[in-house]
Image 1 (cartoon, rainbow, N blue to C red):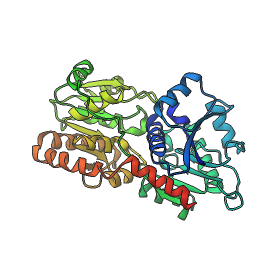
Image 2: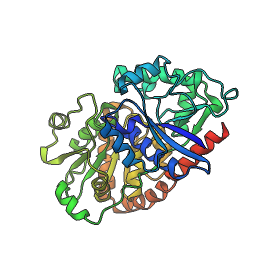
Image 3: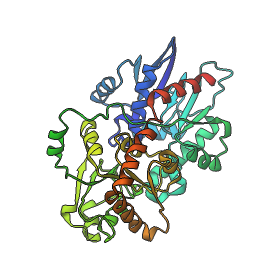
Length: 380
């Protein structure tokens, strides 16, 4: 039996974020698509028993769940220093840069290989939007990947080009995108959920972890701009991140009335499906992305999408969304406001986007991503 050992620690992180969802969905499909004679084992830090039980529930069919000796933070430091001999054995797939990267020769050690996933190049292009510790860790791990990874998965061709400008991975790069979660389905009690969440009849929606890179400050300023649609509020869904993104304070400073912004916080998948489905328009103003999963999720529901002109977002959305230039940065909120007004008030444009979105979203599928991942390991 050939075992693929997947590092799933991000799934049980305090703020899993997009990478946690990516790791969960990919691992679930890797289990479902495992070729004959292959199985999948999960590897995590020294997590509590409750987290391990939660992982087994999320990922049925795991052949095993290896709990390492070190807690998450200490494990990251150890792997950054190259102390990962035991964890690096066998066929390892890391859905992030948290990986046991050490010197090895897969030709001399058949069956031993390490594949790492780099989701974006934000630590180099927009380091000010991350914590200094996060920037240092990411850069250090990508440097280790350049030395020791057998292959590096990236979510878009945009990230592949950017990463290759930093380190010449060349033919070690493989583009494998993400996809909407199979659990994002509008439930039968959608009306009750919408009422419980207090969703307005019409609203502009933003989804994502509350952190500086996501551009929520610009969107809040946009909704306060005279060019924005005045009859629809802004609804924000997503967990707290870092950087003290103060939605209420930002809205007050921008002059956006309290009744025109609603923060839902972290919501479960069934609620999120309702929130996406009922939005008048979804806006993703992120300053830098590697893929932008919420864009594809919103499109899958037929919700018109507005996004920034980040290269990866333009690649993922193609022509199925409205792209807004981030530069010059000072007038970015104004352009977002104008785009929101146009989509909210132009029924023909909104209808076109509602048709194009689902067609584009169907291009992304976790089943296909898993098959491509198995093929990558087979090619190695």
